[in-house]
Image (cartoon, rainbow, N blue to C red; front, side, top):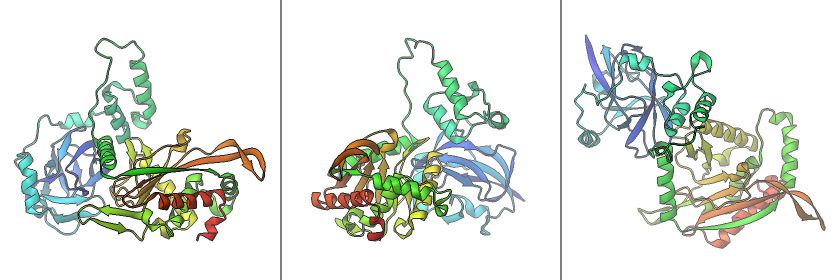
Length: 424
């Protein structure tokens, strides 16, 4: 006996109400298995792969790439035969169930939420919005990775017009860049003097976050310029050490460790203001956020429980986190629950900056570029590696003295990395 079931866009957490379809991995007529990835969707925070809650044959796709779908509305219908979920749940019981990546079916969405979601858009069980892609359309779509599709949408490029030179004809970033350069080299027409792009996805989330940051927390900033030559020397020695073979070591690595150690004596910098209860919440753990300019925009994934990691483990965690973020592969869990953030503007050749707080956090540290400058050292003016640190903080949680002492503690470690041992 067969039955046709619709898989709804699940609630992916953090109060998200919608997601954009990035790429389908199946087409009508395909056979799918339990937990097989069906589609990639982009929320305001990350690209997420959604697995199938049951096995069967794809009947219909209810949205195409680039479409925005609300939570609780249909994504796909699958014809099932005695289908069961990975946990033994029947296919019929999965109607309206939220499924999170890697965890299979979860608890059913409360009926109140289902009614609210359905109230936003009236979808009969097997109806679909227009236009919807046909099997032929899905199979003839240009081949490109999700980040490349995102970049193309941002630049208003139809990938059908781009020639792919990657394996199997896949369109690469270089192919897209070449196409854009070729098609924009002519003088702009009267109607081509400006470009408009919808604000959505990560860019939309970033804009909303920064507005909330600037309007809810009274922010102040302190600066400190430090001679970091000893840290530069230490990093060179560690890179040659066999124990750190294959581990990426940078000034950010030492700064991250310095932040974790300095928080032990300055816990107020690891706190938050609870608006609902009018309480200050001090965390006794460190989820260290790193601001990363990824292919989809700025994101801030965080290293969970960074205070429990060794220097080497922290370096490896930072590298993994930033690589995934740049490839638009940060998960919603990576982006949640940060307690303090570092942003490294120095990688762009910038001396210093005044960063905006990540909402819910008491402080954010900005690292400027470490540059060779004339500097007084041992009574002489010599060339040294010098860096400017900027610390923005929530003045409700931390006063100027506390912020200054915290920044000074970080500076002392960067100026003399033997303090990595002394502070441990």
